[in-house]
Image 1 (cartoon, helix red, strand yellow):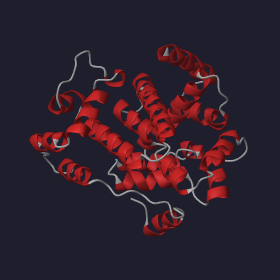
Image 2: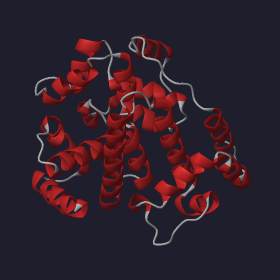
Image 3: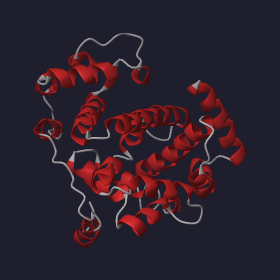
Length: 280
């Protein structure tokens, strides 16, 4: 947990961005999950209480990202196969989509599709490198940019600012956002993750995910936080390469990521090629 002064300093950077309240169902689920012995039946009841929500969750649970070889037919079965925390994260994802939906719904749909691809690839990287649980990597990949839709809602110029940040070679991505908006998507995403009951280590990694220097400060952050950041920047690099795009973030992060994973640049290049084949 951050100190009060640091938390207040971060709060001041929200610059009027409105963080949507956490839905009551997440509050209840989080309360149950924090018990020494969560009641499985109560978790199933809560997740099944909204038919539309549970339907969307089951659709994602049966997608290729979670393929178990068998079709899951109920929330109860999904929890037994995927685990309570993973199903909770799918609930959060669907509720966030609803909460953040706005006029630019087509653009947001592309945003969520991109996040889902990053999440899926992040989970696969975690499986191959065995540095973090794949479900944690998936969760971070899904939510790491969740502050962007809220920035777009608050600042009309967000899209152009993000474009400039993507092209920045000598500045941190979030420094460009701070310059023009007075805040950035990492700070906004951190508070959204905190309010919406995502794990503390996911929220911390969201806050730091464009500050690659943290990969050198291993005594200051948990290995789970650092692994999420390293996996994510690698996943996004692979996706951009696959799409034929330019990725300045990888140029900033590559030596630190290689060192963190204990791989040579050539070893990482081999991994990248394997994963591009895996993407198809």
